[in-house]
Length: 529
Image 1 (cartoon, helix red, strand yellow):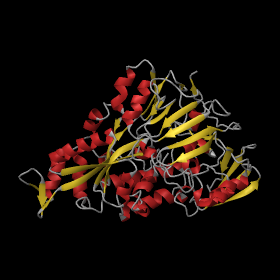
Image 2 (image 1 turned 60 degrees about the vertical axis):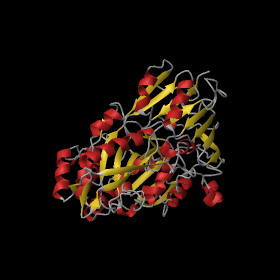
Image 3 (image 1 turned 180 degrees about the horizontal axis):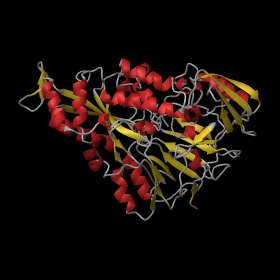
Image 4 (image 1 turned 90 degrees about the vertical axis):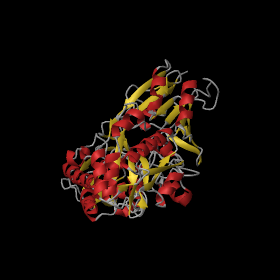
């Protein structure tokens, strides 16, 4: 899973769980082995180091446990922390730890391990997760206290992050910079067997596991004994494998495949609330999008309803703000929501001096309004790019589409070679705004290159001066509204998470626990004998 499971993600396509991928027909490997085809947003994860990685795949949820786990309704539940309490002023958090837990290397999990772990984030790419913590201290062997620099009502969310899996201090220090490639040692239900970057991650069951979270019915070792996490970014290939019985499950199923799968008696479904938003990313430092008028006109030219109908067959929601609709911070003033209005878009460009040329493309000061539109090569993103291209043509903007594979597009963005890009993120917290729009994150992941004083002021208040959950919501809402009013992005679509699985191969719980298919559900899955 990527850092903001997406996080920069950018493309939530197919996470597939199956048996015997690559075999013809429904023939399977050993019944306790399964194959996961990772989503394209997870392709290319270079390691399984939660502290230093900016991109992780689903293996990180299985190799490591967390102090706290999050459920589908965004509630928080104990795991390696049996309980916790916060002082009235929010400046001390005390955690009671589970006893009898051991890392894969046999080392004990205790308060000293937590103190070491928290300190390792300082200066790392993920130090934002623990930035509010001044230090951690041992109270006793199974009690640890976090002494805070400031109140941080979002701490439980951070602790439930994939990037806050807890590694073995002994193994981490011994491996140095190579940690996460040849070995990754946690306390989780699976152990790392091998990692070949760009190809697959292989995991085997931790048979000593006896401390599953309360979100799982199975508190012990997972039923499926071996997992292969394959990197096959093409959604069509995964779909065909599901149909033929070579793959057992698709998570984040592209809606174009839904009608065919619903007609198949061997396929069943689970649906989860949305976890991210598909949107257009501007490069605000690149002409013509350094001009807010052009950004606004472009945003108003995009018809979200057409994309919902044509690309997603009506499945999911139109998005008119950047955050997922489940978050209170998404409930912005309707006046700043971004909606299709082609007449206003045309009027804005007319008034700004962009006149239509003989070929219909607008021109100003001898420059034609021609832009580069970047997209990942998956079908979903190509189709969105083509629809946006047609909508911009109606405004007098000529867009040339260039497609990239999922690993190359990140380099494209980091170099600032884009002008407008089709993007997607997966993250269910308002601090995704910090990730993508804080000036401190230029040039990546803030590849919008957004650097506006008022936005940063509101960002700093939301991120660092919120003392309670209610105050945090209000502060992030104001920050969100500022970004919307400046047309820093163009929201398009909020997909539902459709999980399709072959019921002749897998038994999947009726209720999936967690905001996505994560450890809590994996340990409850069974192969069909």
